[in-house]
Image 1: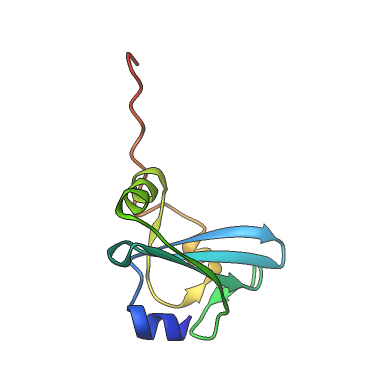
Image 2 (image 1 turned 45 degrees about the vertical axis):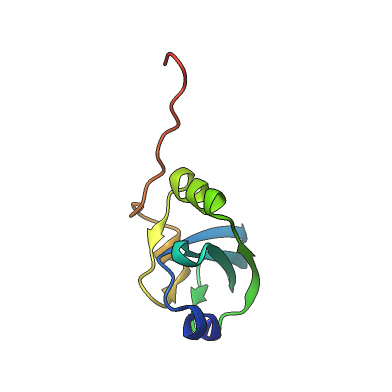
Length: 104
């Protein structure tokens, strides 16, 4: 992750997702770069995001897709390296916009 941050700068948002008790993923969201980078965190309890965290994937999106992601996903502000829980627990900093339905 350190190399990504060196090249792209700090992400604006992050979101943790548990895969199993000993594996988790933290999505690093770069709206201005229209991309998401996926980093490995070794577990929900002890996992963390550090400069040496392994990058396991990335997506480059068009403007419509990144706008959709931002409007439909609850996210945490990136607060730097730290425990997985920083990006998986507590109140979201950026909340999804509820979709409007016709007549409701």
